[in-house]
Length: 238
Ligand code: GRF
Image 1 (cartoon, rainbow, N blue to C red):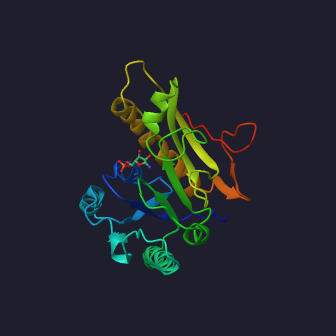
Image 2 (spheres, rainbow, N blue to C red):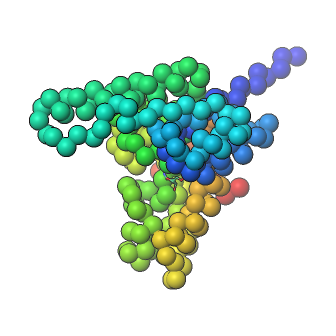
Image 3 (cartoon, helix red, strand yellow):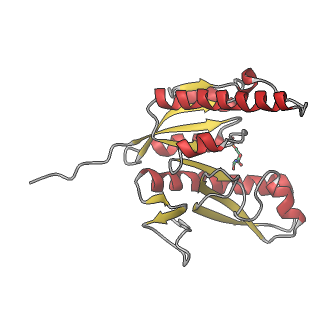
C-alpha cells in the first residue's frame, strides 16, 4: 500500500522591526508538531529590536540587515540623490533576499516590519509573502489605525492578514478578525484588544498558507476553507 507523502514543514522567516509579539505568537504556534511551518529565521532591519532577543532565546537563527547601513533617507531631490536612494534600497533588499535564500526560506511573514518593500522584492516572493495589518482592510490602510478608528466613531475594528503586493496594505485577504470598539476606549486600550486578536489570527493564517489551503492565484486569495461570496475572504473562527 502506498503511503501519502507528508508535506514537509515550510521554512518561515519572520521580519520584524520591534518588540515582535506577533513573531512570538508564530513561534509558539510552530512548537506544535502538527503545525505545517517552522520558524527558521527572524530577520530585523534594526539591530536593537527586542524581538531578536526573544528569537535567540528560543534558539532560532537571527539576522540583521540594518537599513541605515545602506544610506540615510536623503532630503535632496536632485536626480543623483534620487538615483542613489533607489540603489540603497535595492542593495538593502538584495541583502534581505540573500539571507532568505541562505536559510532556504519558503514563506515570509512580515510582523511589524517598518520598511516599505519595493516591487522587486515583493514580486520575487509573491504568493509566499504575507503581512498582518492592525485594521479591517481595505479600510484604514497605513499607520495610526487605532487613533483613526476612534476618531471616526467606528463600532468595530480588527486585524487582517493578507498576501503582500506592491501597493501597500492592498493584497488579497487571507483572514480577518473583528473586535468591538468600546465607548471608553483609548488608542492604547483598543490597540491591546486588536493585538490579542492579531496573536490569534496570524498563526491561523500562516497555517492556511503553509498547508497550501490558502493560495494566491491571479491576484486573488483562493482558499479551501470559509470563503465569502467574493471568494477572497476567510474568517477563521476556530
Ligand atoms: C502589530 O500591530 C502589527 O499589526 C503591525 O505592527 C505591530 C507589530 O507589533 N504591523 P509586534 O512587533 O508584533 O508586537
